[in-house]
Length: 124
Image 1: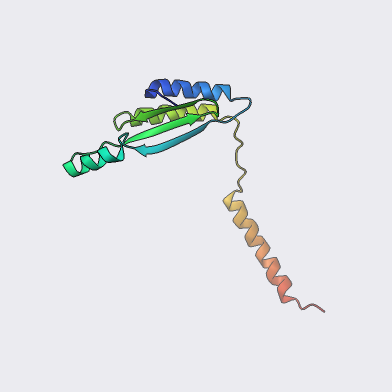
Image 2: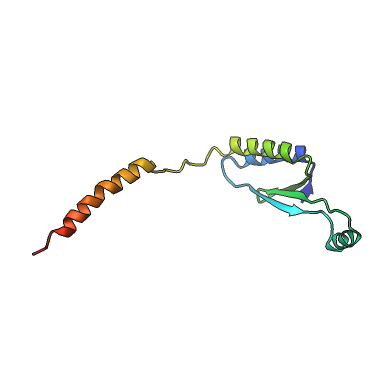
């Protein structure tokens, strides 16, 4: 696994999406991390030092794995760039078919009187 700075990570992520356009997938995971071992974190807690948590972002296409650590001050800029990449590269997704809420409730109201009238008629 290669750990990159945030900007080169975004460039390599874009390249991964381009390579897998025709066939393949890209998996991206985000994890809350302090980038310190548990022993160091425990020592820092007992000493009263504040632990700076970061976001560990990993991406893989099955062949190559890259990662980066995003700190609090870079988070907003990274997140907006990351969102832009995702919006431009997820063109193969299909739109979900949704019923219009008004049409669905109107059709339900129309069906209810029919059910009531057929239930009121006695069957021979």
